[in-house]
Structure formats: C-alpha cells, structure tokens
Length: 252
Image (tube, rainbow, N blue to C red; front, side, top):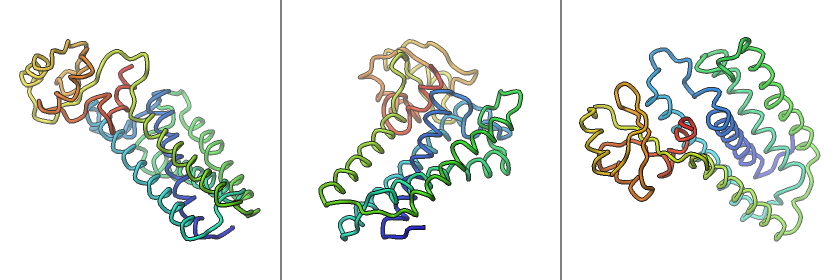
C-alpha cells in the first residue's frame, strides 16, 4: 500500500464519510433501521433517535480528524492527491461497511440493513459486498498506483473540496426533509405529560402526534420558537442543529 503522511488521515476521512453515507441513506432517507433497532429493551423511540444522533455526532468527530490530518500533511509539504488519495478514501469507506457488517449485523446483532426484509441476511451480504468489499478492493488498486498530488494550488483546491463536501454531509444529516412541515421534539427523561403540555403552551405549538409517554412529540410550531423547547425540558429539537435532523426524517 502507498504510504505517506496523509495515508492514515485519508483512511480516517473515508471511514467517517462511509458512516455518514450509511446514516443518511439508511437511517434517514430509506428509514430501514435505527442504530439500535434490534437491541432488547431499547424500543423507546426517544432512545432510538437519540442514539442515531450520537452516531452522527461521532461521524462528525472522525471526519474532522481526517480533514485536520490532511491539512496538516499539506502544510508540512506532502504531495496530496492523485489515485493514492482516492484509493485511501475508498478503502476507508469500505472499511466502515465491513466493520459495521461484521460487528453490528452479525456479532452484536444491534441492527440489520433492512430489518423488515423476508431474508435480512441477503440484504446484509449484498451491502457488505457492494459497499464494503468492492470499495476496499478498488481503493487498494488505486492506492498502489501512488501518483503526485500536483501543484500547491491544485492540492489546496482538492482539500477545500473535500472539506466542503464533508461539511455538506454533516449539514445534510442535521436537516429535516424539505417536505416535512412539522417539528419533532424529544424531552428529557422525567418530564411528565403536564410538563410537555406546558411547553406546548409556552411555545404556541400545536400537538400533531406523541408516543404513549409523551417523551417524543411531533408539533406544528413556528421555526423561531423551536429553540424555546430547550428551556422547557427538551433534549433534542428537530431543525435546531446537531444532531436533531435524524429524527425529523423518521417523522416524515
């Protein structure tokens, strides 16, 4: 494998982007599973979406670490770019899906790719091959080619593009779908239905749906009033930032 000061950061960045791809596509867009869908006694929607949010928060940290490593290598004069970098990114992404498949799907059993499928193992295996093994193999081939990163301006442009695209993935993970007119609110454990109704009155919100314990509610509320829920016992509020976007997709 081609080795340079930016090889490890490239792998780390690819790993984090692979996690973003997984979470955005499977948790939010397709809604095939939550992170802890099959964990016994974790059937509370509050906990499910909270852990989805924590998963995305972890991906932010990993992606930021990879980007910091690449910029640092560039500052130190390393030639960044070419097939070797693209190969490192692909290998990192493939590694995420391989680890997730082996650990989350088959060893721990906390979720499957499509938990309501008649043959969930087939979905697991297909995902494992297409998004895990194939990117790993393709990335290995590209990485072995090496190749120069070009001039300084070209390298900075590439790093800037990676930074912007990574930030875009994070912003996407935070946002509710465009056609979702409502806001999802998760309240801290211990909040009673009376507390929740008081919060609705204080924010001039209309209740649309709630779970049995009123720990998770969907409301029609003015966008400028969303943040007010945090002063009334809310743990996460859809559309107000990290990592709330996950559960507004689930409420779509």
